[in-house]
Amino acid sequence: MKTKTFLTKLTKWEYWPTYMFYVPIIPYYLYRALRARHLVFYLATNPGIKYSGNGTESKYKTILLIPEKHRPKTVFVKVGEDFDIIKANIENEGISFPLIAKPDVGFRGFLVQKIDDLEGLKKYFETYDVDVIIQEFIAYKNECGILYSRIPGNSNGEITSVTLKKFLTVTGDGTSTISELILNDSRACVYYDYLKAIHKEHMNAILAQDQEEVISVIGNHARGTQFINGNHLIDDELTTMLDALNQQIEGWFYGRLDIKYDTFEKVKKGEDFKILEINGIIAEPTHIYDPTTGATYFGALKSLKRHWGIISEIAIANHKKNNVRYPKILPYLKDIAWLRTYSKKLKRLNK
Image 1 (cartoon, rainbow, N blue to C red):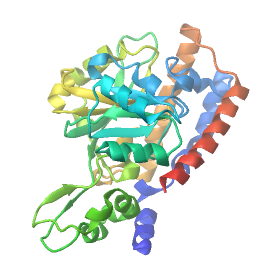
Image 2: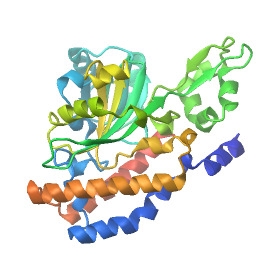
Image 3: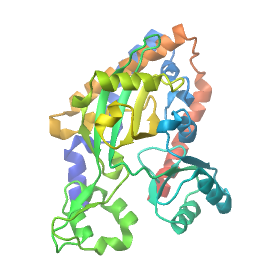
C-alpha cells in the first residue's frame, strides 16, 4: 500500500510538495520586490487581516470580518480553558452537535475534525494543546472556493478562480469493507492513515451494493477532497455579488472565500450560503489542481505567477493610494519563525 501511495504522489503533480509550485516563481517575486523597493511589500494587500493573511492570522478574528448573514456561529477557545466554560459558550452561541473543531491558526486541514458529542469534544481538548475555534456544522451539501480580487480605487473586482469541491466518497459492492474500498480506490488510498484514524471501528463495516459513503467532510485537498475546475460558473451576476460582499469586509482586497451552499444559483443571488473562512495572500487558485481538465504543472505555475502579479498591484496601490505602510521586516520574520515552530507542532499532533 505504501508503494502504491508513493507512486501516486510521484506521478500525479497535484500531490507534489508546496515548494515545487513556489520555488520556480521566486525570481518573479524578487523582480516585483525590487520594483516596490521593499522585501515584504505584499503584506499591504489586505490591511484588515494580520499580515494580509500570510498564515499567522487568527481564523476567529478573520471570521468576524464576515457579514453576520454569511458567518457561521463560532466560538474561540483559548488553550487550557475550562471545559465547563467551553460548553457554556457553545450553548450560548447556539451551536449543537455535530460541530467542527479546528486550530485558530491552521492550514492544510491539520486537526480539523467533525465532532459528534461532548465526549469527543472533551477528548479533542485533552489531546491538542492549541487555541481552537468551534464552529457550527453547516449542513449545506455543496462546498466551493471563490478567489476574488479588487484593485484599491476600483469599484469592481475580478473572480479568477472557482473551485468546486467533491468530498471523498467510496461506493459499496456488498462484500468489501470500508477499509478494502479505500485501499482499492486510487484517490482514497492516498489518505488511508488519516481515514483509519477518524473512522476507527467503522473500517470493517460492509457497504451494500452501490451504497455511497462520504468518508471525509473536510473540504481540504490534504484531506482527500477533489478540486474541480468551476471557472465556467464565473459571470457578471456572480462578480456583482462578490463586489457587494467585498465592500462589507473591511480591509480585504484579495483572497479566497471557502463557501458551503445550497445551490450555486442561490450563491449568485447572495442567498443560502455560509463563508467558512477568508483566506488572504496565501490563497491559491485551487482550480489548477483539477487534472481532469487537461491542467498541467507548468500551467499551474503560470496561474500562480499571474496571481502574484495581482497581489503586487493591490499591495502597491494600497501603499500609494491608501497610505498602508509596508510592515517592518524584523517583527515579520519573528512571526514567520514562530509559524515554522507552530506548524511543526501541528504536523506532530496531526499524526
